[in-house]
Structures are given as structure tokens and as C-alpha cells.
Length: 202
Image (cartoon, rainbow, N blue to C red; front, top):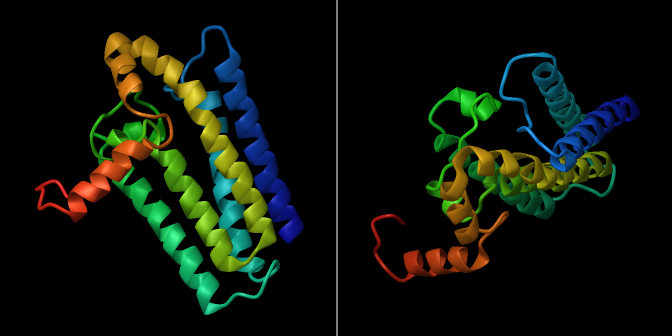
């Protein structure tokens, strides 16, 4: 059963990576996922469900296949996984409506986690899937997690050109200020500022 789950998840992840690369390398790229209902939109979310369903099923059915699960691995993996999930919730909380989460509305934000990363969902998903795979001690889940993180790391190359066209100089200025994945200097300054001061935004 685990071989079937891993195969389904891997094929879905490879499909997403291929579609994302195709959009990113095209001369006139559109956003990915598509911003309109249709066949491509349905395929995108079918692949998402294939990846997510396979990953969570592998967590449940292949626990301990790589190493024995101990309180230490549960604590470390759980901390990373919950941290990543929290970043995703924080990111989703900045959206104005559900259409943005689904990808049906193309927009960009500069508040919340978007002050520290142009693509905080990359970090959120990396932490979530990586942490929970570590928690489970599953090599199958870890392998699929690598594919998921790779796909999310590629997504900005398909999405950001569409944002540049849609928002012009506004997005270019934002892009010049904030790093694609994580603005280490800004993150360090923000953490130290909150630790050593009583700022209202901490």
C-alpha cells in the first residue's frame, strides 16, 4: 500500500513541478495555479489533493520506517511542523478572501509574513511537511516532502512574472526590498527588536 501511495504522491508532485516549470519558462507566463475555473484549474487541484492525501496517508501508515520514533524526534519534528503550519495560517490570514487562497485572485501583500518573505508559503510548507515527516520517522514521507518543497520553491518563478505585469512598479519596488524566500536581516532585526523592546507590533 505504501508503494502505491508514494507513487501517486510522487507522480502528482512531478506533474506540478513540470507544469510550474512550463509556465515559468514560457515567453508570456500566466499565473500558476490558473486564475479561472477550467480544466487546468481542476488538474492543478487534483494534483494538490493527490499530493496531500498521499502524504498524510504515508504519515499514518509508514511510521518508523526510517528510524524508531522517540519522544525527542516527536518533539523536534512536531515543533518544526507546527511552526511551518503556523506560518501558513499567518500567511492565509493576510488574504482578503478565499479566492486568493485558491489562486483565483492574483494579488500581492506587503504586511504580516510578507514583510519577511515574498513567498512565506514556501517556508511554511517546508517546515510543515518536513517536520511532520521527521516526527513520523518515515522515509517515504520524507521523500515525498522533498518533492513538495521543491515544487513550492519553484512556484515563485511562475507567479512573480504575472505579479510584475499586473502591478508594475509597485511590485518591483516591493521585490527590491524583500527577499524571495526569507529576508534574514529583516527577520533578525525584527526578532531582536521584539526581544529588547516593548514595540506594539510584537
